Image (cartoon, rainbow, N blue to C red):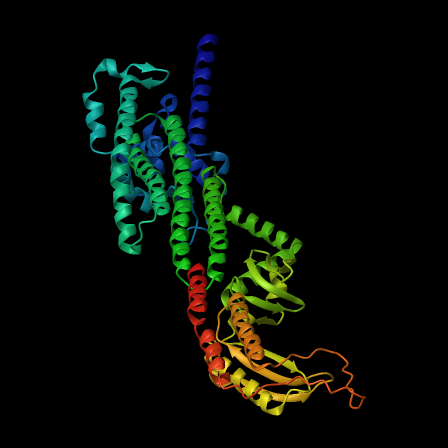
Length: 554
């Protein structure tokens, strides 16, 4: 009697516990509970698909069960492992990143945003959009041959070794063979296509670009291969843990290859741009090549690392927010560096000078050798180096002598006081003829005149403009003019004065005055002057050749 009562009470108690457990496990009160309910009742040791089907919105019976099972297979096939510690359990949760207004949660916003749960009344269910997308997602995840493989695999092929069936091992080997064949075949094809595109766009067959394109073809083929493998792997139905590992490895490799591809694209673009800058006269754009290369490389690496972090479950918004806060702190700690960087961009935008220009920047005078991220390097005439911060250089007054249309030359020639007026006139006319005959002088902007009486010489002003592009050619032009002036003075017998004291003895027994015996009546004077003028005019070819050579270097 007591034994029967005890068994009845025990049965009732067990039934109560079972009912209580069922009620607690079928929980649709929040996103966490709904997703757990769906996945829990489709596990092998707790398989009750009719309970998992209760999470489907708008479906009942066999249709709901079918959709619930298909959704579980989609998640397993894509290696999408739900981490329940990150799924909210707030019944009033509202996803601020969703496009819909209301209570809504997306399980995998980056990899599969179509799957979400939504609150309907007091229950959280898989959304209407998710339920409608299951058939399409299932077909995309599992190609047509998936069912064929399952139906045609012999019994011994389903034997397991380390949790993986034999036919799945064979499938992995087949994919490996397919990958190797695909890589070696398409690498050559893709390289040929890239070469054709490069030649059509740039008409350039540089060896550097060819080598870079060959290196670029490899990761592009690997990216295509990863794309196909990600499509084929789910058909092997390897299981959630293995698929999670494989897809994580594929995604990491994909990001790494994309980083490599974009770095090579930057290199190709910068190589093409560098070839272009060699054909331009300006040299500042040559200096822009390494700066742009470093800048674009930094952007590619930053975005690549950002994408890698998201693969490990770190939200992109958190990374960007952290980077922004860190960047702000770094900017506050290094204000001078930021100012110099802004100054660098202003220099490249305004282009106040070019590499090789002779400039005056404050107290610094010299040739611009380099414009870097932080500072510019200027070499003075004594070969010393001035390193000027770009923030300073972008704010001060810069006198760019390298952009002069003409280079002014002004000097005074001092001749002796006892030079006859007729010889002075002849000498000045000869100087004018020399300036007119010089191949690199501005003819309508020159002047020669007897302008002053100095302490120990008669002053003759020579003012002219050289039509040359650079400092070294200007010195060569001066050299030719100076040689011609010295030859003219020697021909005429004109002597240049220097500070001295001359004692003139006017009267002394049996002594005569010192006579320089100037001879200005030589019959061939004009002929000799013309000879000197012709020699100077013939210097044009030498200077033109030098300027052309400098232009080619630029």
